[in-house]
Length: 172
Image 1 (tube, rainbow, N blue to C red):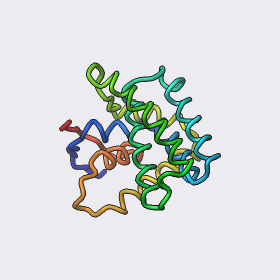
Image 2 (tube, helix red, strand yellow):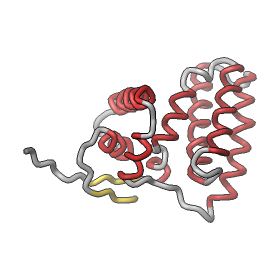
Image 3 (cartoon, rainbow, N blue to C red):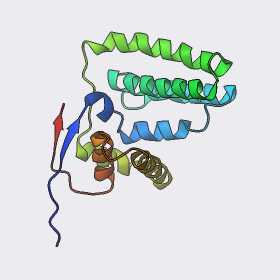
Image 4 (cartoon, rainbow, N blue to C red):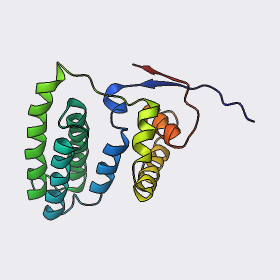
């Protein structure tokens, strides 16, 4: 029997709330579809559905998750020279709507960081294919960053879904 050392995770709410398995499944299903107008429209419909139907309706955490994704998509457009395209305009329009919703919630509602138990419950509710896609994507993201870069939120999530011991976490 091996003894696992306890781990202390220094978490940041705005990063940790990204690691909800249900959100990760939505995010993963959007990958690779931002480079055509039809793909953007399909992704935005998927995101609108996530806000409205999944997990009890719109809340600050889900709006923040989507705002973060829109920022990443726009950064990608900048890097690919796609600023000002029809795709970019659609993303900006949705991002503007999300920003207005976020302002409505920001003063009144905390961002939600799931407990390890709730994370596992949601993780186990996903299909095996979705779980593998998420694991592969996030593991690749972690490897792409240097060890010195601060990624405790991602490490914590991967530790939870990989069944590794999680002792405690410290909100920042």
